[in-house]
Length: 115
Image (cartoon, rainbow, N blue to C red; front, side):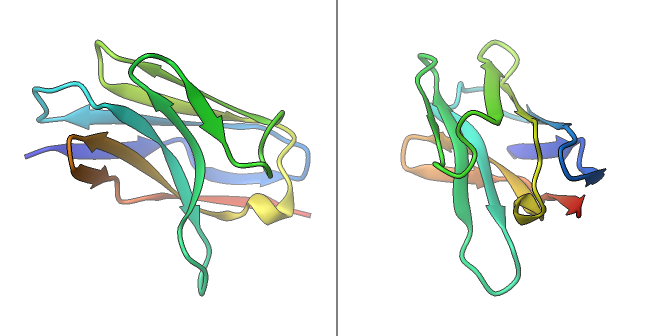
C-alpha cells in the first residue's frame, strides 16, 4: 500500500521560512508527478506546486518567487521550500503524487504564519 508522509510543518512569523518534506513508502513505481496542495477550512484544496518526473515545475501564482519545490525520483521524495511566508499561506499542506490515473495523498501538515 502506497503512503505519502509529510513532515516539516509548524508555526512561523510573517517573512519567515519553512521546508516541507514528503516521502513515499510502499511504492514500487515512480510517480509521474509529485507536488503540494493546500487547503483552508471552507475552501477547496488548491495546487501549490507540482513537478513531473522530468523536472518541469508549475507553481500557483500566489507563491511564485517565494516557494521552490524539488524532487528526488530515485527516492520518490518531494520537498517544498517556503520563503517570505505570509499569513495567507496558512493552511494544511498535502503531499500529492500521481501515477497513471491514480492520485495519492498524504495526511497533511499544518503551516501557520502569524502576523
